[in-house]
Image (cartoon, rainbow, N blue to C red; front, top):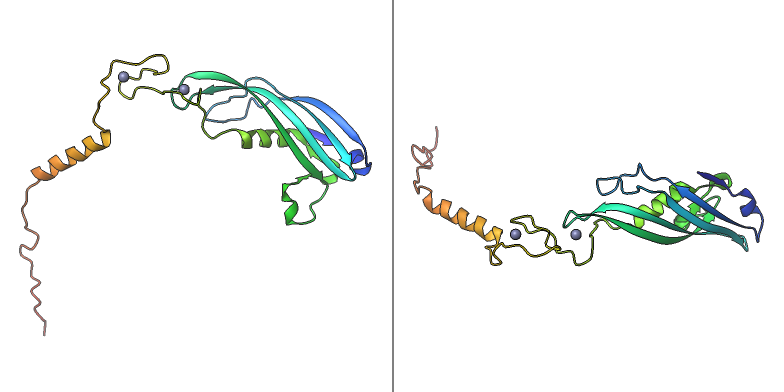
Length: 187
Ligand SMILES: [Zn+2]
Ligand SMILES: [Zn+2]
């Protein structure tokens, strides 16, 4: 969705507010499509003393699956962002600015990028999610299971298997059998 902001760039004191909804249903994230309902966005753009600033907030819900207990859940999110808009970049230092060539702002691309950068790489249903029992698969958030509490650390059990197999290995040393290399020199 392109917004024409030419007038805003040209007129000091100009101000425009907007309200949009975006469909990010095709956006793949966490191996699924979590934007099952539209993203609501409202914001304001203002030219104050020649500096054009965009401020907007977004509200949306995400259909997610917990990375730890694999339980589906829904999370309401609201975020606020602010950017300086420019029609062209003057130097490398301006790279935080949002470029609007010819006074056009690609709003949904900006909103999409802002949201995706803000979301965490992993999702948990809650900070203290207890996850699944690695033996019986019970979701430990719903109650404890009957598995024994004291288990051998799986890494240690691998190590003890390795030690067993090493002891069983034959200790034959036939490496040098027929070995002809006794330092003989050739004519
Ligand atoms: Zn969880
Ligand atoms: Zn268990």
